[in-house]
Each structure stands twice: as C-alpha cells, then as structure tokens.
Image 1: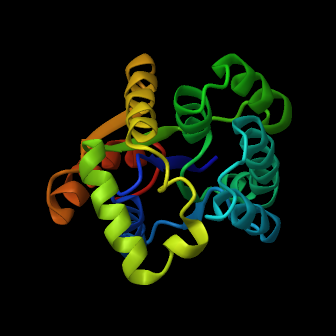
Image 2: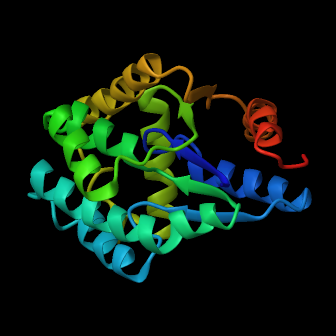
Length: 218
C-alpha cells in the first residue's frame, strides 16, 4: 500500500533541499516515488496556495487558513496521495496535517481538537506513516529563509508567514516538538543545524529500515 513520508519543520529548516536529496536517493535505488507539497500538489491546491501564502494577505484569520488548507488537502489526497499509495509508490510530501496543528493551532491559537475534527471529517483522518521533523533554532531558520526568499524573489509572493513575528515562529517550533514528543513512533527528529550532507545521511539512515519493512529494496 505504499509508504507515506512527510517532511516538516519551521521556515528555513531545509525541507526543500532534503526532499530533493532523499527523492533522488530513492530514484537511485529504483524506488517509485511521488514528490508533492502542501499547500499545493494539484491545480486547485496551487491556486489555494497563492491565496494562502500571498504576502499582501496579512489579515487572514487562522480559521480562514484552516478552511483553505483543509480544502486543498482534501483535493490533494484524492488526486495525488491516495492514488500514489494505492499504486505502491512512496509519497514524499512537503508538509501535511502536523503543519496545520503547529501553525494554525499552537502558533495561531486555534483549538487543536477543532483542527483534528476538521481533518477527520474532510480528510478521513489520514496520517503519514512517518514524519521527518527537521529541527533548528528559530533564529537560524528565519535567517536562512529570509535570505533565500529575498535572493530568489519568493518573498514578494509567498512571504506572509515569513513576515510574522519571531514569537509566532517560536510557537510553531515548540508545537512541532510537542507533537513529535506525543507520537514518537511516527516521528523522526533530525538536527537541521548539521551540514546538508550530514542531515541527508541522518535521514537515509533513519528511513531505510522503514522502507525495507515496506518491501522496498534500498
């Protein structure tokens, strides 16, 4: 039934780089892999992403964010994730449900039980098989993110969360760590302050046994 792997972490933790490296590792071992992201992953999801992350939309309420991200996720599951898993592919996703708990719940102030019930109602309560949490100090992540986004122009169109106050991002980080502590069987926490190569090696070392348990030859 495939394997569903999600990468999570604060802004600037290195998810995009590590997802690229890990997906290439899978391809080198001839493992069928589908790489996707949230919000996004589908044409509808990408339209929602533009609304969700647009720098000008600073007044968006957490409850509005929840509605948008849940709509995008329901479409994403139906169109991309579930079909790929049914085809016995490994799905590697940049953010999923725990991002909603961390950003809209722990940092945004929404009731986490409301988020959970919404996920169960609209997304069938689907959870990843394993979540890789790339953890780094908030100041480190924000410094990386802001430097990158200003250099490549991303900030102008997807800078809404990056522009939030430091305390918001610290709550996101602590939210992630709290969730990982509550579900240690589903989380792998990686020190993202290491070099890019060291983080990649740590991820491969941690995930290879899970891939083999699922029948993939790596």
